[in-house]
Length: 187
Image 1 (tube, helix red, strand yellow):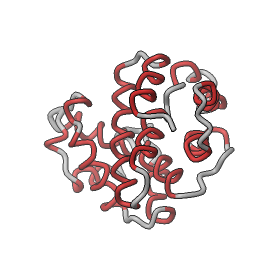
Image 2 (tube, one colour):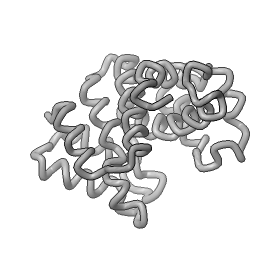
Image 3 (cartoon, one colour):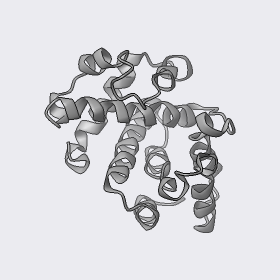
């Protein structure tokens, strides 16, 4: 299996935008926390979170190919772990309708990716600091469609059906994980 340093090197080879890198770090932290919640392989889940958008800069103009390039790059690095590859591919289900998430790993990535964006948006209006953010402040902004308009709330809300974690609990797990790396996120 690929280790964290190898994943970090692969990400930085293909991604230069610091905001995108911070997003990947946020999803990595949340995925690790969710793995702990599910008593799953924390390192594997964290690597999936770190690499999920690693090909975005090269595929942003063609969303249908997003995640496919990353899967190819991983295979080129001799990563043949089907859990990692399938999870990354399932991340783009909303755009290409392929590789629907099937298990806790895949649904965790699918739901948490969008949630990290909402949490960052709330932090930006709360003094640009995660320390000023709590679950209630995120829940307050959740139904406000014009706030962080690009965040697909329906994707986040699937945590209740697919992961059996209620929305406040899901937000709490993600927020704590992101607060733990707030310096890396610049928040």
